[in-house]
Image (cartoon, rainbow, N blue to C red; front, side):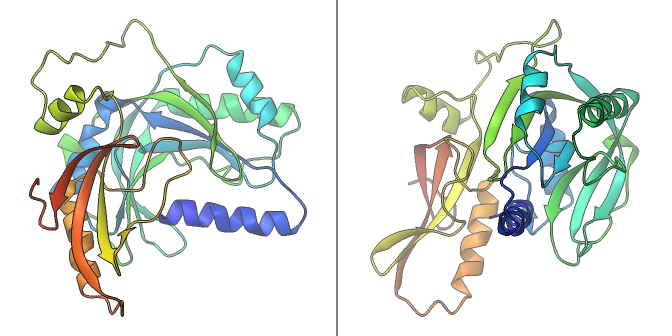
Length: 286
Protein backbone atom coordinates (compact mmCIF):
# COMPACT_ATOMS: atom_id res chain seq x y z
CA UNK A 1 0.00 0.00 0.00
CA UNK A 2 1.58 3.30 -0.99
CA UNK A 3 2.06 6.01 1.59
CA UNK A 4 -0.65 8.31 0.19
CA UNK A 5 -3.31 5.61 0.33
CA UNK A 6 -2.20 4.64 3.84
CA UNK A 7 -2.38 8.25 4.97
CA UNK A 8 -5.85 8.75 3.49
CA UNK A 9 -7.24 5.57 5.03
CA UNK A 10 -5.81 6.47 8.43
CA UNK A 11 -7.43 9.90 8.17
CA UNK A 12 -10.77 8.38 7.22
CA UNK A 13 -10.58 5.90 10.10
CA UNK A 14 -10.16 8.75 12.54
CA UNK A 15 -13.06 10.54 10.91
CA UNK A 16 -15.34 7.52 11.25
CA UNK A 17 -14.63 7.39 14.96
CA UNK A 18 -16.23 10.82 15.18
CA UNK A 19 -19.37 9.51 13.48
CA UNK A 20 -18.76 11.02 10.07
CA UNK A 21 -18.87 8.96 6.94
CA UNK A 22 -17.95 10.89 3.81
CA UNK A 23 -14.91 12.47 2.24
CA UNK A 24 -14.07 13.71 -1.22
CA UNK A 25 -10.93 13.99 -3.26
CA UNK A 26 -11.03 15.55 -6.72
CA UNK A 27 -7.98 14.93 -8.88
CA UNK A 28 -6.79 15.62 -12.41
CA UNK A 29 -4.75 12.78 -13.91
CA UNK A 30 -2.03 13.28 -16.49
CA UNK A 31 -2.97 12.33 -20.03
CA UNK A 32 -1.58 8.96 -21.00
CA UNK A 33 0.44 10.51 -23.84
CA UNK A 34 2.25 12.82 -21.40
CA UNK A 35 3.09 10.55 -18.50
CA UNK A 36 6.17 8.98 -20.12
CA UNK A 37 8.31 11.94 -19.09
CA UNK A 38 7.59 11.25 -15.41
CA UNK A 39 8.43 7.57 -15.80
CA UNK A 40 11.64 8.61 -17.57
CA UNK A 41 12.45 10.96 -14.69
CA UNK A 42 12.06 8.13 -12.21
CA UNK A 43 14.53 6.08 -14.24
CA UNK A 44 17.00 8.85 -15.07
CA UNK A 45 17.18 9.99 -11.43
CA UNK A 46 17.43 6.37 -10.27
CA UNK A 47 14.65 6.98 -7.76
CA UNK A 48 13.85 4.40 -5.10
CA UNK A 49 11.11 4.02 -2.52
CA UNK A 50 7.40 3.95 -3.28
CA UNK A 51 7.35 5.15 -6.89
CA UNK A 52 4.16 6.55 -8.37
CA UNK A 53 2.94 4.00 -10.90
CA UNK A 54 2.00 4.50 -14.52
CA UNK A 55 -1.57 5.77 -14.77
CA UNK A 56 -1.50 7.42 -11.34
CA UNK A 57 0.35 10.69 -11.94
CA UNK A 58 -2.02 13.46 -10.84
CA UNK A 59 -2.59 16.80 -9.14
CA UNK A 60 -5.21 17.24 -6.43
CA UNK A 61 -7.78 19.99 -6.97
CA UNK A 62 -9.89 19.58 -3.83
CA UNK A 63 -9.54 17.31 -0.80
CA UNK A 64 -11.67 17.35 2.36
CA UNK A 65 -11.73 14.57 4.94
CA UNK A 66 -15.25 15.45 6.14
CA UNK A 67 -17.40 16.09 3.12
CA UNK A 68 -20.21 14.65 0.98
CA UNK A 69 -18.90 14.08 -2.55
CA UNK A 70 -22.30 13.73 -4.27
CA UNK A 71 -22.98 17.45 -5.02
CA UNK A 72 -19.50 17.76 -6.50
CA UNK A 73 -20.07 14.74 -8.73
CA UNK A 74 -23.44 16.09 -9.89
CA UNK A 75 -21.82 19.42 -10.69
CA UNK A 76 -19.09 17.78 -12.74
CA UNK A 77 -21.61 15.64 -14.61
CA UNK A 78 -23.42 18.78 -15.79
CA UNK A 79 -20.26 20.65 -16.69
CA UNK A 80 -18.28 20.55 -19.91
CA UNK A 81 -15.01 19.46 -18.38
CA UNK A 82 -11.85 21.01 -19.77
CA UNK A 83 -8.50 19.64 -20.79
CA UNK A 84 -6.26 21.53 -18.38
CA UNK A 85 -2.64 22.30 -19.20
CA UNK A 86 0.34 23.02 -17.00
CA UNK A 87 4.10 23.18 -17.23
CA UNK A 88 6.76 21.36 -15.22
CA UNK A 89 8.74 24.02 -13.32
CA UNK A 90 11.03 22.37 -10.79
CA UNK A 91 11.58 19.77 -8.08
CA UNK A 92 10.48 20.12 -4.47
CA UNK A 93 10.31 17.91 -1.41
CA UNK A 94 6.92 17.78 0.34
CA UNK A 95 5.39 15.94 3.25
CA UNK A 96 5.61 16.08 7.02
CA UNK A 97 8.54 13.67 6.85
CA UNK A 98 10.14 15.44 3.86
CA UNK A 99 10.01 12.19 1.92
CA UNK A 100 7.90 13.10 -1.12
CA UNK A 101 9.85 14.15 -4.20
CA UNK A 102 7.52 16.09 -6.50
CA UNK A 103 7.53 17.99 -9.77
CA UNK A 104 5.95 21.41 -9.36
CA UNK A 105 3.35 22.30 -11.99
CA UNK A 106 2.70 25.87 -13.04
CA UNK A 107 0.35 27.53 -15.50
CA UNK A 108 -2.58 29.88 -15.77
CA UNK A 109 -5.05 27.17 -16.80
CA UNK A 110 -4.54 24.87 -13.85
CA UNK A 111 -4.51 27.72 -11.32
CA UNK A 112 -7.68 29.24 -12.79
CA UNK A 113 -9.42 25.87 -12.74
CA UNK A 114 -8.50 25.36 -9.07
CA UNK A 115 -10.03 28.74 -8.22
CA UNK A 116 -13.16 28.07 -10.29
CA UNK A 117 -13.90 24.70 -8.67
CA UNK A 118 -13.09 25.77 -5.12
CA UNK A 119 -15.07 29.02 -5.40
CA UNK A 120 -18.10 27.05 -6.59
CA UNK A 121 -17.74 24.57 -3.74
CA UNK A 122 -17.44 27.35 -1.17
CA UNK A 123 -20.50 29.11 -2.59
CA UNK A 124 -22.47 25.86 -2.25
CA UNK A 125 -21.52 25.46 1.39
CA UNK A 126 -18.70 22.96 1.00
CA UNK A 127 -15.91 23.24 3.56
CA UNK A 128 -12.68 24.76 2.34
CA UNK A 129 -10.12 22.34 0.97
CA UNK A 130 -7.78 20.90 3.57
CA UNK A 131 -5.02 22.32 1.37
CA UNK A 132 -6.27 25.82 0.42
CA UNK A 133 -2.77 27.04 -0.50
CA UNK A 134 -2.72 25.49 -3.97
CA UNK A 135 0.69 24.09 -4.89
CA UNK A 136 0.03 21.89 -7.91
CA UNK A 137 2.53 19.07 -8.08
CA UNK A 138 3.00 15.50 -9.25
CA UNK A 139 4.61 13.07 -6.84
CA UNK A 140 7.41 10.93 -8.26
CA UNK A 141 8.21 8.89 -5.15
CA UNK A 142 7.94 8.61 -1.39
CA UNK A 143 11.39 7.79 -0.06
CA UNK A 144 12.80 8.61 3.37
CA UNK A 145 15.94 10.68 2.99
CA UNK A 146 15.31 11.51 -0.67
CA UNK A 147 17.57 14.28 -1.98
CA UNK A 148 16.52 17.22 -4.14
CA UNK A 149 17.85 16.66 -7.69
CA UNK A 150 19.14 19.41 -9.90
CA UNK A 151 16.50 20.78 -12.24
CA UNK A 152 17.35 20.87 -15.94
CA UNK A 153 15.84 22.97 -18.70
CA UNK A 154 14.86 19.87 -20.71
CA UNK A 155 12.47 18.91 -17.91
CA UNK A 156 10.35 22.02 -18.52
CA UNK A 157 7.65 20.42 -20.64
CA UNK A 158 3.98 21.23 -21.03
CA UNK A 159 1.57 18.49 -19.99
CA UNK A 160 -2.17 17.96 -20.26
CA UNK A 161 -4.58 16.71 -17.62
CA UNK A 162 -7.50 14.97 -19.31
CA UNK A 163 -8.88 12.55 -16.71
CA UNK A 164 -11.16 13.91 -13.98
CA UNK A 165 -11.59 11.63 -10.95
CA UNK A 166 -13.46 11.91 -7.65
CA UNK A 167 -12.96 9.37 -4.88
CA UNK A 168 -14.81 8.68 -1.63
CA UNK A 169 -13.49 8.00 1.89
CA UNK A 170 -12.39 4.47 0.91
CA UNK A 171 -10.46 5.89 -2.04
CA UNK A 172 -12.94 4.21 -4.37
CA UNK A 173 -13.61 6.06 -7.61
CA UNK A 174 -17.14 7.45 -7.62
CA UNK A 175 -16.65 9.50 -10.77
CA UNK A 176 -14.30 9.34 -13.74
CA UNK A 177 -14.40 11.14 -17.06
CA UNK A 178 -11.76 11.32 -19.74
CA UNK A 179 -11.95 14.53 -21.73
CA UNK A 180 -12.02 14.12 -25.48
CA UNK A 181 -11.70 16.87 -28.04
CA UNK A 182 -10.26 17.90 -31.34
CA UNK A 183 -6.72 17.61 -29.99
CA UNK A 184 -7.21 14.06 -28.76
CA UNK A 185 -6.17 11.25 -31.04
CA UNK A 186 -7.20 7.62 -30.75
CA UNK A 187 -4.53 5.09 -29.89
CA UNK A 188 -2.71 3.93 -33.00
CA UNK A 189 -1.90 0.25 -32.59
CA UNK A 190 -0.52 0.02 -36.11
CA UNK A 191 2.84 1.07 -34.65
CA UNK A 192 5.19 -1.61 -33.37
CA UNK A 193 3.93 -3.17 -30.15
CA UNK A 194 6.12 -4.50 -27.38
CA UNK A 195 6.23 -8.30 -26.92
CA UNK A 196 4.07 -7.88 -23.82
CA UNK A 197 1.46 -5.88 -25.76
CA UNK A 198 1.53 -8.40 -28.60
CA UNK A 199 0.92 -11.24 -26.16
CA UNK A 200 -1.98 -9.36 -24.55
CA UNK A 201 -3.50 -8.57 -27.94
CA UNK A 202 -3.34 -12.24 -28.97
CA UNK A 203 -5.22 -13.07 -25.78
CA UNK A 204 -7.94 -10.57 -26.63
CA UNK A 205 -7.01 -8.25 -23.77
CA UNK A 206 -7.45 -4.49 -24.09
CA UNK A 207 -3.87 -3.17 -24.17
CA UNK A 208 -5.02 0.39 -23.42
CA UNK A 209 -4.78 -0.33 -19.70
CA UNK A 210 -2.29 0.15 -16.88
CA UNK A 211 0.42 -2.50 -16.87
CA UNK A 212 1.57 -3.83 -13.50
CA UNK A 213 4.47 -6.12 -12.64
CA UNK A 214 3.53 -7.94 -9.44
CA UNK A 215 6.22 -9.87 -7.50
CA UNK A 216 5.19 -13.07 -5.68
CA UNK A 217 6.73 -15.47 -3.21
CA UNK A 218 5.61 -19.05 -2.64
CA UNK A 219 5.56 -19.22 1.16
CA UNK A 220 4.72 -22.56 2.78
CA UNK A 221 3.10 -23.60 -0.49
CA UNK A 222 0.94 -20.46 -0.82
CA UNK A 223 1.42 -17.76 -3.47
CA UNK A 224 1.74 -14.42 -1.67
CA UNK A 225 2.00 -11.02 -3.36
CA UNK A 226 4.90 -8.97 -2.03
CA UNK A 227 3.09 -5.68 -2.63
CA UNK A 228 -0.37 -6.24 -1.15
CA UNK A 229 -3.81 -7.24 -2.29
CA UNK A 230 -6.09 -5.74 -4.92
CA UNK A 231 -6.25 -1.98 -5.10
CA UNK A 232 -9.51 -0.14 -4.52
CA UNK A 233 -9.57 0.77 -8.21
CA UNK A 234 -11.53 -1.84 -10.12
CA UNK A 235 -9.51 -4.24 -12.28
CA UNK A 236 -6.15 -2.99 -11.10
CA UNK A 237 -3.64 -4.65 -8.81
CA UNK A 238 -0.82 -3.29 -6.73
CA UNK A 239 2.37 -3.63 -8.67
CA UNK A 240 5.18 -1.75 -10.34
CA UNK A 241 5.30 0.06 -13.66
CA UNK A 242 8.76 -1.39 -14.44
CA UNK A 243 9.84 -5.01 -14.07
CA UNK A 244 13.17 -3.86 -12.62
CA UNK A 245 11.27 -2.52 -9.62
CA UNK A 246 9.60 -5.89 -9.08
CA UNK A 247 12.99 -7.63 -9.21
CA UNK A 248 14.35 -5.15 -6.68
CA UNK A 249 11.37 -5.84 -4.37
CA UNK A 250 12.15 -9.56 -4.51
CA UNK A 251 15.80 -8.89 -3.68
CA UNK A 252 14.75 -6.87 -0.63
CA UNK A 253 12.41 -9.67 0.47
CA UNK A 254 15.27 -12.17 0.33
CA UNK A 255 17.07 -10.21 3.03
CA UNK A 256 14.14 -10.16 5.45
CA UNK A 257 13.88 -12.70 8.30
CA UNK A 258 10.47 -14.08 7.34
CA UNK A 259 10.75 -17.27 9.37
CA UNK A 260 8.81 -19.34 6.86
CA UNK A 261 9.84 -21.62 4.04
CA UNK A 262 10.05 -19.83 0.67
CA UNK A 263 10.33 -22.21 -2.26
CA UNK A 264 10.09 -19.77 -5.16
CA UNK A 265 9.90 -16.14 -6.25
CA UNK A 266 8.31 -15.03 -9.51
CA UNK A 267 6.71 -12.03 -11.23
CA UNK A 268 3.48 -11.70 -13.20
CA UNK A 269 2.73 -9.01 -15.76
CA UNK A 270 -0.88 -7.83 -15.75
CA UNK A 271 -3.05 -5.65 -17.94
CA UNK A 272 -5.78 -4.60 -15.52
CA UNK A 273 -6.72 -7.83 -13.72
CA UNK A 274 -5.58 -10.15 -16.53
CA UNK A 275 -2.29 -12.04 -16.30
CA UNK A 276 -0.34 -11.76 -19.55
CA UNK A 277 3.12 -13.16 -18.78
CA UNK A 278 5.20 -14.82 -16.10
CA UNK A 279 8.82 -14.01 -15.22
CA UNK A 280 11.36 -15.61 -12.91
CA UNK A 281 12.84 -13.76 -9.94
CA UNK A 282 15.48 -12.17 -12.18
CA UNK A 283 12.97 -10.75 -14.66
CA UNK A 284 13.42 -13.37 -17.36
CA UNK A 285 10.22 -14.35 -19.15
CA UNK A 286 9.23 -17.95 -18.60
